[in-house]
Image (cartoon, rainbow, N blue to C red; front, top):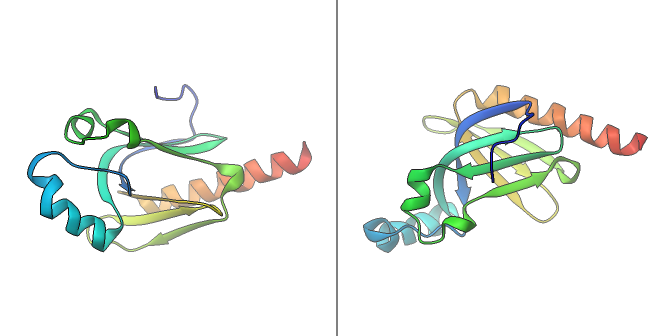
Length: 132
């Protein structure tokens, strides 16, 4: 997916991808332990916030080092978001974007500011759909 032409905010981020499968040594025991304890693997890339969605695209390096590069992208329609939660992490804090059916988990620098921007965009998207 190419970068959107119009966006509200963009962050270099990691996304917790449940279906991620690393190649080589990372795909063995280390990958299994990470999936068991965290629910997936952290994949590096870019998070894009537009007026309609929050999306994540893996970077080229992560595409090369995973067995399933086409399953590393994620997006959530803002009109379906039920909660945006910020929590403290070890080096970078974490944002959980939840819907009825799924959760997109991101970690990035200045995540509190990014979480606020996501919350504002969710409110705007929901208000626009009410007025439509």
